[in-house]
Length: 292
Image (cartoon, rainbow, N blue to C red; front, side, top):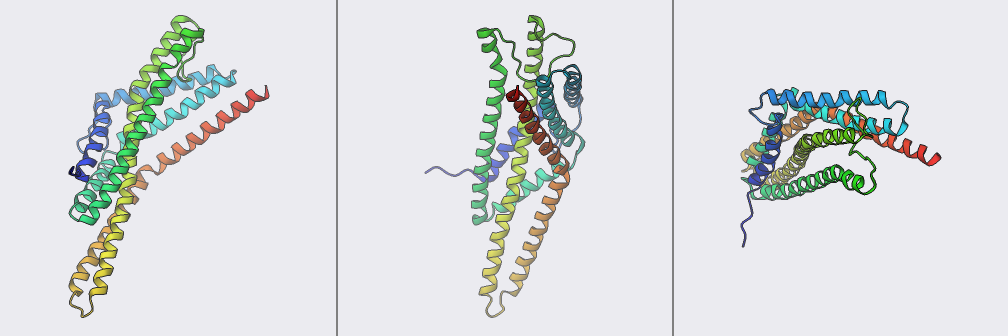
């Protein structure tokens, strides 16, 4: 019979790969030893350069509704990326504290068999979520990057993966198309891995809240059973100790959620607003196309 892996070890392995991706990019703000480096500033420079080029394209395509909308939708992705970079680069303590809090939850819970079952359930779900999101996201990126090639070879249509093109470079010319294609693919080499790794950390933080709630329920049930069994008052001291532990655990959970909200409230608003605007602009263009 196969021995089940320790939930904490599984959790550490999941986080290890996310740390590794962000560390390679120089933006591992979730790591305890993160310091800004030349690579950090280079990634920030590339992100801001992409945003500036997108703004220039908006001006260049102001008379073309389709391309203007295509660029605008891409800009919203850039804003989401800049928002995540800001969290990873600016907050040198808060993300690390949250990750350490998650590890503390695991380390405390593995000592209790019932709580270990809760950890195992949520860790399995987290692993499945991370794998599914990573495969779907990277699959979409690879498809987006490679699909223009067979279209170009088959029909000669010069289709680019996304809307942003280099200013003052004719995308319709052979050299201009190749240059724009290489630039867009180069952006896909570093942006998707960073977005995926940061998103997987958000998944882990969300699952950590569920773990703590379920563990708190188990602690309350154990306390309730102890109170029921305390017929002669001989368990008063043990009840008092358990009650203090439950209150402290609940306070730690509230603090964890509060720290998470303080760190990500503005970014969550930004991402929801950007996604909503992307949907609105896409539907608007589809309405115009159907009306023509």
